[in-house]
Length: 228
DNA sequence: AATACGATCAACCGCCAAGTG
DNA sequence: ACACTTGGCGGTTGATCGTAT
Image 1 (cartoon, rainbow, N blue to C red):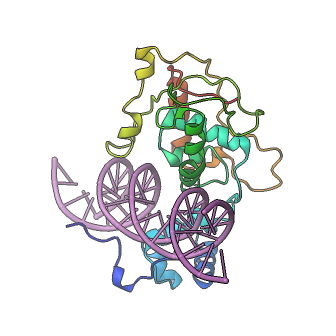
Image 2 (cartoon, rainbow, N blue to C red):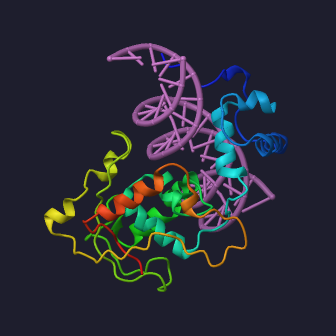
């Protein structure tokens, strides 16, 4: 039997109140992030540590960029998804100010549909021959362009979740349905001139960045529907 | 105006991997 | 080497809001 992450009976659940937000912000301002398990008690919150972490990362962090996704952000998400599959944290790591949750939600609510409407299978980024594909991506033709075939070389982080997404990986190379685009990926957001502290991806901790870079570099198979 | 329906997004859940003793 | 703890991730759920009927 798995141990719960915290003593559920003493914790609040559901939407956060302003007071709770403020407590969390105040505490992290003083003590910094980390030690999520003990944080709630220390901060005087009746929440489990996981909940605090999520709230901070997805909503309260000062460097979050909220609001609609720009067209270049959309394109980047699609490209990265073609490469990485549902590895939202990695994708979000290339989008300054965006969280994995936000990217995931945006994918599921907007981009998936968009690809489908273009006749592209959002799981493997391959053109679905049966569907019409007369529409431009993103409604305008500025960022859309050559639609090339894609498949997914990504290796799932774990054996479960991604499986269905990547099961098809590489198959397009074999079955010859995919034309080979030149993989012209500039997988980084251009930040015009950040007036302040939007953290650039390089700041992302751990080895994430080097991993993704390696992955991209080693990705010899053209997997993307490119929008350019 | 009321209701139904769909879309969106914040939050939770369960699993996994890394770290530690 | 093993067990346990903790942080992090992706999938899913449910509340809320907007739109159509």
